Length: 196
Image (cartoon, rainbow, N blue to C red; front, side, top):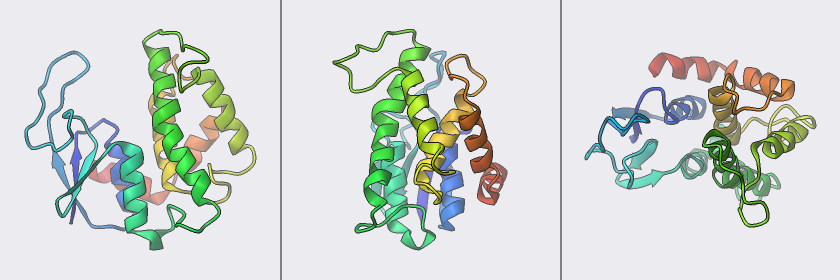
């Protein structure tokens, strides 16, 4: 049984969705985390090294960080088809999207949110407007990041875009809005909302 270390209304909710998509057995362990306003504390029951969520434990194997968890789970449950396996031509793009999420998308959003200029030419990420342009261009070729096939990468991106959607941090894009709607209309998303 895989344990998801979870706090409601955080990025860990996306893994309820991924577990539902995978049809994989899991249990939820709610933990406390520090909050944006400085309240809260690191929960000693949480195996994440910085007391954040998400993290999972699979028979003692601890995995943390959203892209790593997505890759671990899709590799563990390949029959669900949510992550291309080794040898599949889509594996490279899938890995690229997972790494781009943590290395470019998240820092781009945080730069905008914190009103900090991206050090162009030295940073490993770009401004959020460039990210949105790239993602929208990719989605113009197919309904999902890998084309016709929905993957765990779409769970990471669509939940992030939904989270930032109403915020001025998120550049407006009808292509991205349609993508979020398409992803979150999946039955597994509704099931996950019921277990959150």
